[in-house]
Image 1 (tube, rainbow, N blue to C red):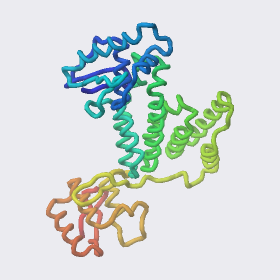
Image 2 (image 1 turned 45 degrees about the vertical axis):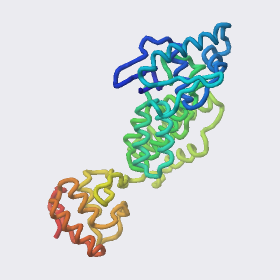
Image 3 (image 1 turned 45 degrees about the horizontal axis):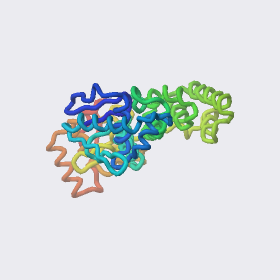
Image 4 (image 1 turned 180 degrees about the vertical axis):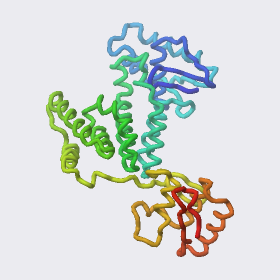
Length: 343
């Protein structure tokens, strides 16, 4: 079964919605158990959460009744609500819960050092977010008590994804992705800093400085504090037009083809730029050339984009294996990437 808790509560089996007619309390109770899968949630804690300290005398019986109904409804789908001492538990890892998957993906993204992989993991995590936890069945108080950390984790994911995108030169994407979060969360200075940097690198210095001024007004008026040192330093560097803020896009390998890592992102047409920029081994080392470990990479890249026939790619790879220190000379005809042919 699939349980969607991020946003409106929804349960699906083989693509079909189930538990459609269940009561709000039953869905809340089930969500609490799913969020703490593998752990025993006592009846007393369930009562405290479901009634927020104002439980009637019949609360314990109501919980037992809800459990009975859920067991009957979920049994055909293989999900068991186990009674353990004075509480209940759901076995972990037997069904898909979007909130748990979200946490797993964000943690995995934080642990990876490859910015492209980090962005992909964050994209998968953020795609699960359909809205606040149990948006249609839980009030703000219950939502804060059972999943308050999820909102903060989502904002952290947005921050980390934006910083990885900036490292890859994807500032235009950051400008668009953080437009609403920067407006809604001016107290999240990492979000503000990322969007300021993206705006600046997109040639919108005025908008970047305006974002800083608006953020500062909010922090002073609402929280009584000045922006942190990091945001202030970024603002000062923008005023000075510090050239270190202009970080040109660099290729980031993210695609494995055969035995080679190929650049996943370049600033222009990938094949043309790869040929024009990285095929000139004879001159000084160019920015981004560290991604080209040998001319075998160029051969695989050309074959991957159908710019060279398979037999030519094979011959170049054989030559790379036997004479790795002597790359062939390349010449460019016109401006077409397809004109990049071995001399």
